[in-house]
Image 1 (cartoon, helix red, strand yellow):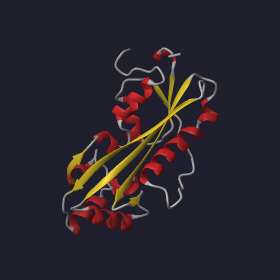
Image 2 (tube, helix red, strand yellow):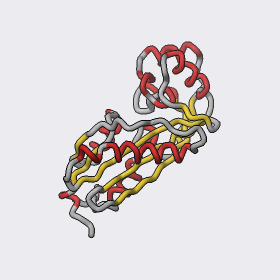
Image 3 (tube, helix red, strand yellow):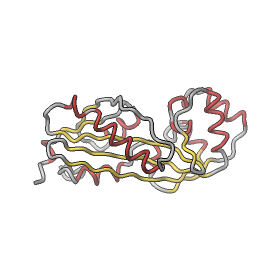
Image 4 (cartoon, one colour):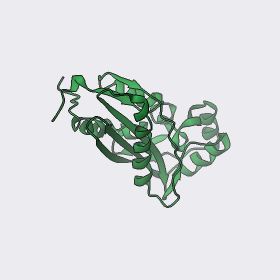
Length: 201
């Protein structure tokens, strides 16, 4: 049975300001419950397995605090992959310089996993998207100047495409919002599976 979308409570299991802004752009009311899920993964996992499992793990982590409300919980995880090497968040500025040096002048892939859980009906949907991003060639001075802005500090791959990092990107192939951290077209289709329509309200 599809429930009317106005009766569903949406919970975003993420403390990311970027994901919060993207979900808010859909115009649906939601609540944020930051997930403290373990984000460690086995080294043999593929990029798809990493983002799909971590997105699900993050969503599952907030089920106990979501209460008995008729909620749909959204979890998401994003990684940057270059030549099958996963680039997470930088440990420090030196690590940022290393990552940006590897990415400059080359094409890499951004994977984002999305999980939607409806605890009331015991329904779970998990999917992911991949976007290719080509960085322009950069000098060491440019890389240092970008790191000095502080923007790369907590970003997968050490850049933010929605910020000053946009000046480093030459081309993207695929969903832009996927690179920011939440592919909205994918999410809206998944939400429809829980009776939540973004367009018909």
